[in-house]
Image (cartoon, rainbow over all chains, first blue to last red; front, side):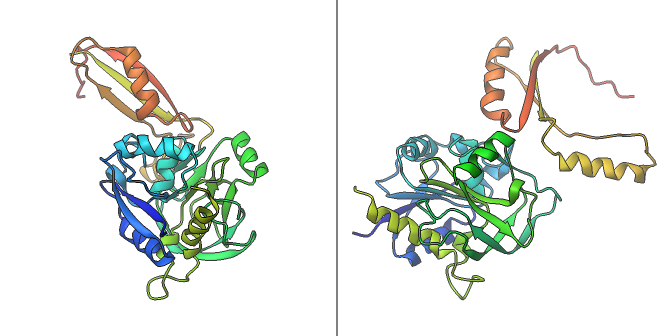
Length: 227
Length: 86
């Protein structure tokens, strides 16, 4: 059976097409989900793509959090459904309190768009189990509000529990605390990542194929999970 | 119509790069006695009936502010307030 991975489109989503394509290249069936439809249509996992949902009005992800699809998704994620939030999707997961902390304006105030080396710190999540801990990967980063912040107690807890999933290497593009590029929830099924694995799945368009690992990981995770 | 004003500010411990950028621009205006600038957001809410501070607080807590990084205050502003154009 082919796994079905949902990709949510909000008004202002940009990378939903690339996310669906990455899902397909990884060998799963992408299922387009709509922000106004609370139904998840029986998908096995969900990607919240990058972009500028609702024009980033108020705060990035603040309004998307109240979209009808999110009510269903928050419950499903708490029940163990794998969810990957990329860039704006990461911001939405924080606003929805599925992940701790917040993403704020880049410290230098500039939009950063470049290929970025990351070190995978945790290979224990639903979205990173095909990587080796400590593995360095190259994927694009592009954000204006990607500076991860949380209070010291939360940061210490994330570190102690192995919930920092990836860190920036060779220069922090946005001032994120402790060079954090990606984190996960306690159960390891929800991951938020600021850089864009969906843009690094084909030699023609990406700097590497390293991003594909996130999507093949969730397929491996689903095979190992009894339905 | 009286309205509820919500002021949202980044918590003191959260870096405010926008405020810093503004502060750094002030010397170019010849202003040299400003120690710091912090930027927040003011939201005005008009209810269809009487202003409801409790409801406004709920709106601020759930949507207008992110309590992880921001604090907010809520107050009723009388409609007599007229902008003073100097």
